[in-house]
Image (tube, rainbow over all chains, first blue to last red; front, side, top):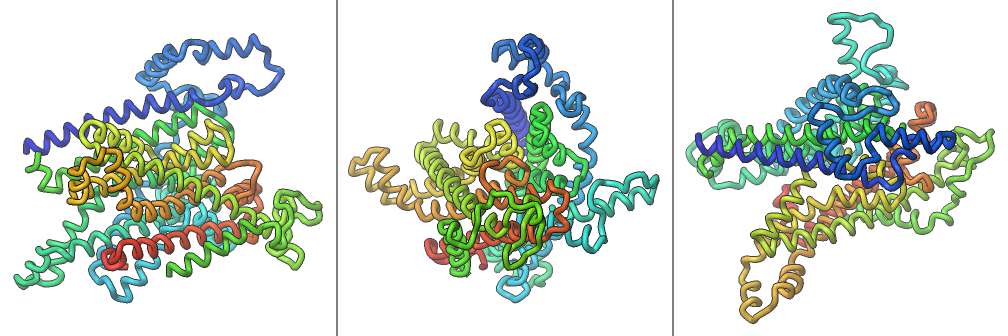
Length: 325
Length: 270
């Protein structure tokens, strides 16, 4: 077990260092913006130079770069992510409000996508070369090539507007006064299309991955041995092939979370789902840099932490890790 | 299948290069107020948008942006990624490890938020889009090239050259690099699809170059106009074009990989 603990420790330290690097990068990116940020904030030419200077001091932009950096760090440790220009509220507050909706959408969509994608991919790989496999392969390649926002727009127009089966956006029907079960149903009804948009791309990717991995695994000697031993096909699939095929899939899941973020941003924007992804779009349109900076930090750190969780899971399920270190 | 992809790409290339001759008008010129949001007709082949601009022209000219960004960003990505991967794989130990840590860091950053932040900060222009897309894509190439270099490094022909007294530099570029080129091609095509997608998303979100019409910005205007649902002719051409171009480059990529690496298709079960 010592190997596992050492592995976990190493991964945790790496994650921590990455987060520190992200925090620094976040600072640097927004300071290298060409042009004076105060001028960007207050473009109205009627604002006097004195008022601009006062603003500069208020935001701490009159200090040296080093001074600003320290102030930034101090603020972060207090949970202060700055003030949103467009909403006139602390960024942290705005983000906190939106996180639950995004979590709901992303956990639902990803869970469905992973289960479906892995199942179909494993089956396709198992039956590689058959018409079923060819069909799944073509379908997945197509699904993988359509940008999520494009698919979202099509779904919105076809199913929400023209066929009116689903709502046009948002998370609940406004002023409906639903409560309890009716409320939950309303949310699910609103969540269907955005989740579906995210699921499609993800399923495509997971099918391709799992299928590829399964094909590689089936080539291995231990599968031949298992067959020679007389184990049933299903037994082989369950106990030998699937377990090993899933390992690379778990690894890739970590890397993929970055793409999940893209899917969230796109789907939330198209369907006006009130989550952090939609917030990014709003921040961009309103040039609300503190909000943009805060959202970026949130996404980046979440991805690192999620990766850490997945690495630990991988370490737990792959017996080679425990022994190796 | 690869051939089908190639044909589609060529069609778009023709559209991009010969745009002015393909029965188009200036895509950015707003038209008469009577011509706003017309459905496809013999005068406006794909209809008009909310500023009475011709959608056929926009679609044709839009291919210029997608292809330019796609090809240039892919070029920069592959060159950068290969240089880093080559150096990291070849020199190993301190330099290699340090480079890979940087690569890992970049890979960890979520792509779209990073692109959005950089694009927002740098300002909307096509060159910034190309830069931003490259920043996000080069780590994958670096990683892939480095693995290849690591395995090539141990091969006898490298050792043989070293015995003759070839310098590190010569080894890297005359011995190992030529063997990495097939991989670079495969990566390049993949990066093209990523770049086309990246430009489309950024433009859709409003971070594209405001001085040029691209498929993504067409969708941005359609989405923002509020009348998107009533003007399917505005929405379908750009979406179809984006998907067609991405799919055709994917098919081309698979075909190229199969040619350069015999058995690629069987290995992947394609």
